[in-house]
Length: 188
Image (cartoon, rainbow, N blue to C red):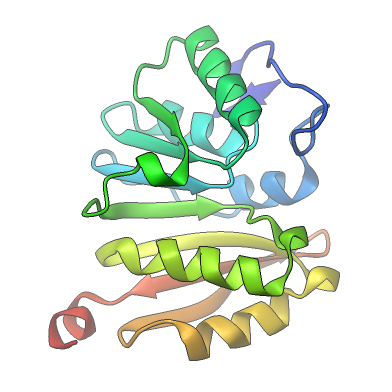
């Protein structure tokens, strides 16, 4: 596989999302998202075997990448893949292992849409408000799996100071950008 221009043999497994390749949605996200911040804490929600986390770590070697998943097997795969790439800036952890006061310079995710609307909404409301003011979350969602309704829901559900826009459309996927504006975040 190739991530951020680096070729490597990825360790994947059945029971983890897209075990054979970088899925189409993640490819769209990676191709349509600007470079991540060079430092700080970066977050991948629902990391699977790690293509987004590893890309963040390769592009921002001075940042700390938090690869979060509820699947221990997925976290073990992220750790193995980070090790294979010589990356020591990836923390593959369960959600409860992320310090509660930690804020993120960016969040990138191909969120687990199939967990159901209620669980997905709770997941996004747990993490997106933890952006640093002036920072962005980038989410990729397949159009026919509800990207437009998720966009509308995010507009209504996120706290004051957030602006949600459609940043890109490609191959039936939408890349949504949720920006926490610095000036509005200070007023909240």
